[in-house]
Image 1 (cartoon, rainbow, N blue to C red):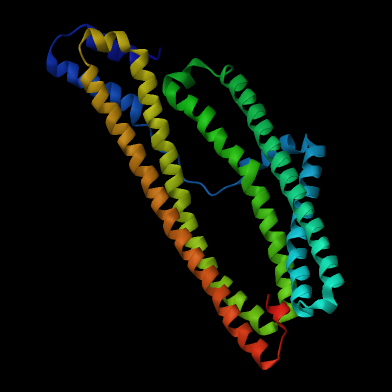
Image 2 (image 1 turned 180 degrees about the vertical axis):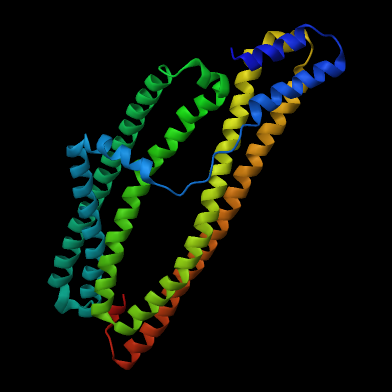
Length: 319
């Protein structure tokens, strides 16, 4: 029990004056729920400390990368096979050719499925293992800290950081990084294939990317700030519940249940509003990305169809 919480309890026990009780309740709510927000920082340097932990599982990292490359190669090979099939057409004279290429496509799809499954398994395993190790280290470190740290920090907030924040790291190392690498490799391969096929259509796609990047940067920063705010308010509500339940006997003895319920409701409502703002920003970002991406696809197909009609390129190349 912290000295601040002890003082609040003593204030509640030593007075029956309703005004003093209200002040004590407000003090407890402020102490538990209104933690100071974390300072804003764009420094990703601390994440470098996690790299040695990830590299301690080198074999699984290697298998994850191999699976990732396998899935990327298979994904890029499917359009090339479809292009050949379309260009040669479907008639009685091309029966063996069609059988051959569709058989190869089945093998490519099997390779894609195997690579995707392997990537998901190994990357998720790394994320789960990393978070488990990190929680062990953080918990062990917390037990070595001086009592002054726990006097100044809320137990509920510390627990929230130990669970919720480490879960964010699991999402980062367990899926986000692998998806980003997959998209980078696929983007590089697709750009090369597009430039080989048509410089004009490739330029149109590059233009769409240049339009999309500023939106990603602008809204990405906004989403990052709102995500941090949502995480802070969630930790605040958890701290309020932790500290209130820790003083539940005093709360019940002084008939302060309704006040505590209202205080917790305000905290959870604040957490909901923060999450709602984050969700809205992500929804706007999703709408912009989908519109620009699929709009560029429509434009490419439109111009490509004209080139096919004029004989500048084949239907398979457009596909």
